[in-house]
Length: 105
Image (cartoon, rainbow, N blue to C red; front, side, top):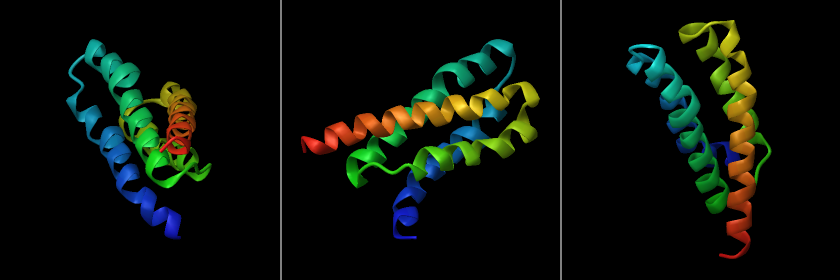
């Protein structure tokens, strides 16, 4: 529970990216820009900063994946389900990079 409280601000940033940014999609180009560039960068940086400040946790990328699943059914269609694993993988990579930086801090 203590670790979850530390994760909460970073997960909230991810939640804003997952649930608010689709409202900014005007056409297919803006949707692809958000899904392929903006949201992955947000996932990467939040995971990196969380892992740098609080050390590595397997729970963080898993929670990012769980957090994105309802968004698939609310804002996208079933074909966007693959992004669940993509965003989880990107968060995992960011967590590993943050862990490496944490070692040298």
